[in-house]
Length: 147
Image 1: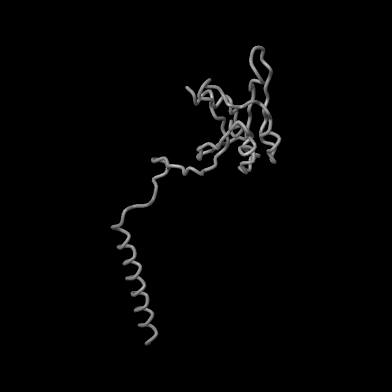
Image 2 (image 1 turned 90 degrees about the vertical axis):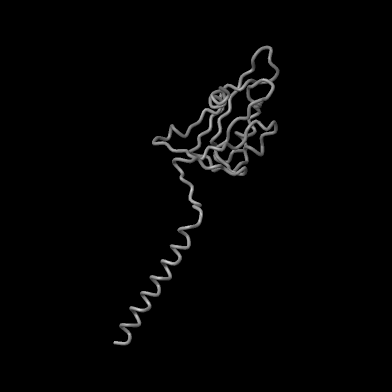
């Protein structure tokens, strides 16, 4: 019979201790982010998928179509194509495609890019129902971002 009352006392004690913790945090400021309604701020070192960097002078891309990012990528997720245009020094970028389903976010492509034409994006909310939603035409995205 003595064990019965001890269990009741221990249960009541833990209930009061738990409610004390609850009441303590009830009056403190909220630290939860209201995600769908409020967009989070991404840290400077956040690594999303890669994106092309726009040239400040011309407004186009800094990419010189050297193909170093494509060669350095261990996943083989980058496809770069360019063509020689008459009257322009060097090649002109015609296609820069990223297959994000293969990308491991290792960053070797960004490190190997000598002109600094690619960087990590701040896109964090990547969702899609089909594989095609994760194959990005980065040249087209750069043009849309300029508008």
